[in-house]
Image (cartoon, rainbow, N blue to C red):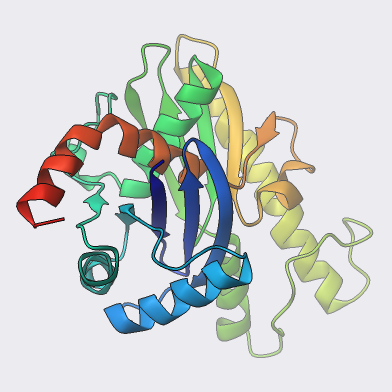
Length: 268
């Protein structure tokens, strides 16, 4: 049974998941550091596996999506040195099963394609994926399973940091739900603006997307803040924090033949 390590490298965090067969056995979130070496990844992954009672050395396959190109080198070296085979890298040339209708398909972030593939596989129809990451993104998939395009906006944490850095008297705040929309202190006022403001932006943009397309589009959200913000919206119908990892597993399965050939070419 294949033991797959899926790695999603985001601008802020890197999410790792281990699939045994078709099941997600465990998943973790670590800080993204572009300079992290293959040996550091080995120490981290081994420690995380052992915390879950998983035997080090049982990994035999990998897939990576990354929006931080300098981080890929260390991860790929980790797979070649410690797993014994190169990992599939989501990018040009990979079989996604999803036509990309962007003017320049190479501009679409790997994570956005992975999310779109997973959402379409799950919902089996037209859909909108809202991802609350470093940036907040909206990705639209047609009922035919085509990636139509999307929207990019600053993420919630970026906006919170911008307030702290550019307004002399405003503090750093936790992204949390205040008791009321009308804040009676600075922290509550900022939290209301961030949480309810982003919920309102999600609803407004999803409504505009639905008005622009000629098909029904269900809305699913992912990312660390998805559940918190989704409860304040009227348009998000479901959340799945693990959507990207599930998408990586789907893409691994679709590219399995090419991966085996590459492994054999590297002596794996």
